[in-house]
Image (cartoon, rainbow, N blue to C red; front, side, top):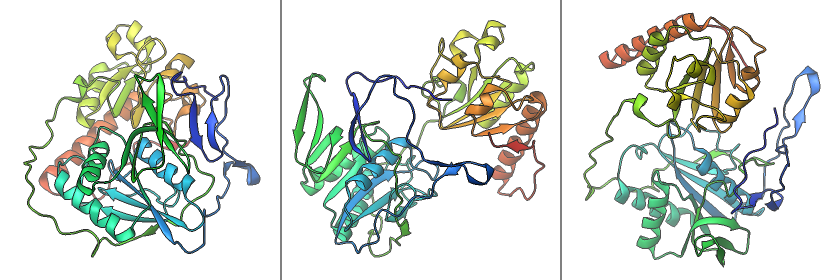
Length: 386
C-alpha cells in the first residue's frame, strides 16, 4: 500500500542519491527498483559504489541498539556514502555490538566496539576511542547522528577535546556546504563542511542505489585500552513497560477484536517487557482504555517491533503504525489488510499463540536466570512472510 507521510513544512527537502530533493505534495513511491523475474519480486542487485583504491576517508560514528543501527544512524552513514567520491572510503565506527550488513548500509570498512554499549555511560573512554580511530584513518570529515541517545553528546565532546570545527542539527548538506536552522527556524545558517557534522533526523534518505565493500577491521592497535573513568555509571533504572508512553515505546504488543482473553494478553506483555496497545474496536468494546488506542484517531507509534494480535488492519490503524520498523501480525486470515503491512504474518489462532509465546518467553527467562540455554523449543506457528 502506498502511503504519503506527513511533511514537515519547515523542512521541505531531503538529501537523496540524486542530490537535494524538494518534496512535492502528493508524491508517492520510494524509487526502489524491483525485479519481477521468476514469478517473485526482490530488490535489484546494487553495484559497489567504488572499486578504486582509497586515498582519503570519511568516518561515521554511531551507537548501535541490540546489534543494529537505528534509522537516524543509518541516515548519517548514507550521508557520508552519498558525498564520497570514487577515491574515498566510508569507515563506520560502531559503538556496541554490530550485526548489521555494513556494506548494504553504505560502509566500505567498519570497526565494531562491543565494549561500548549504549546502555552504559563511558564518555571519556568513547572520546578516546573515537580520537584513536580518527588518528588511524585521518578522515576529511566525521559524520554522526545528532541524537539524544549518546551520539550527539559524543560528537560534541570529541569536537571540544580535539578543537575541531562542528555543525550541529544539520538539515542540508552537499559537497560544498552544510546548513542548519537559525532564528527559531525562520532562517538558515550555512557554512563550508566542518570537521564534525551532526545530522538532524530525517535530513537524509537512507536508501542507497549502491553498496559499500563492507570490510571488517580489527580494532586492535587502533582503539586504546580502557582507563578508569571519572564518571560512575549508576546504570539504567528499570520501569514497567506498561507505564511507558506508546509514543516512546520501542516494543509494543497490540490487541484487536481477535483477542478475547485480555488477562492472558497482559500477562504476555509483562513477560515480554512490551508496552500494550489496542485497536479502536478493542477500545470501543471496553477491553482497553482510550490511551491505548493506536491509529489515526489514537496514538501514532514508532516502535522497533510491533506485534498485532487479532487486528485486521483498518486503514486508520495502519496510519498509526506507518513508522514502525518491524510489524508482526498474528491472524487467522492470511489475506487481512494487516498482512500487507507486516514483515511477518503468523497464520494461527490468537489465543493459542499468546499462550505459546508466554510459555516460551517464561522458559527463556528462567533458563537465562539459571545460566542454562534452551536447546530446543517447539514452534509456535508457521510464519508466512507477507
